[in-house]
Image (cartoon, rainbow, N blue to C red):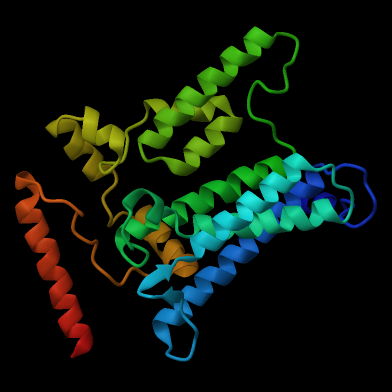
Amino acid sequence: MILAEIISIDLVRTHPEPGREAAFLVLLSFLCSFGFIRTSARLTRSVSWWPGGVETGGVHLHHLVWGIVLLLLCGFTAFATEMESPWWQITAVGFGIGAGFTLDEFALWVRLQDVYWSQEGRASLDAVIMAAVFGALVVIGVQPYGLDETRSIVGTAVWVLITLILAGITFMKGRILLGVLGIFVIPLGLWGAVRLGKPNSPFAKKRYGPAKMEKARHRFRPDRPTARLGADFLNLIGGKPSLPDPPPPYRAPEKEAQMREAEAAAENHTSSSSG
């Protein structure tokens, strides 16, 4: 029923200002552009006839570059002009396409290395899922907790701050989906903030001792049914990782052994692929 209501929203007539219609167009174009560009990348990897990325003088232009350009162009246009139909629809679609292109390579933002087809590249899929869930909740009319209470500015600000802190702790624990839901439903944010974090999360690496880290590894072991189901889902929408994680881009004595192992794994993979 909610989907029927969204689809029935006026997307083409002359509304003076955009509303949830714009959010729906951003979400729809975001999902479509992500599906297209991820499919294109998978075809580039698997077949020889599909065109790859643009390279000029040895410089590879990742598709996040075009996404950033679209985000800047459409965002600036939306802020700087008073648009009427059909221009706000076109801008919303362009913004969604730019977001899809950019978030598909989210892992490259934080790693500054091409980890697209490695395990670390899964961060891009986490970002896409997080953005899609957030956008879907906005489209169906769910407001972040506290924003629907306007009688007290101070009270609203306090609730928003608490919500963001709980959601931030949940994100730091690696519970991405729960963190997004916690922005809209504060009990879920509280639940995620007090629950055990994933062993590879920033929170666990900084705060957990050996005993608690071992407990986290057991709780989030990769062979549990939910983990296998989640991995299969990510493989379905994003493709299976085929390259080892690259070594860190700097030298540090305490990481020499780890770097030698990573470099050896990369060389073995390269030689086996060429053979």
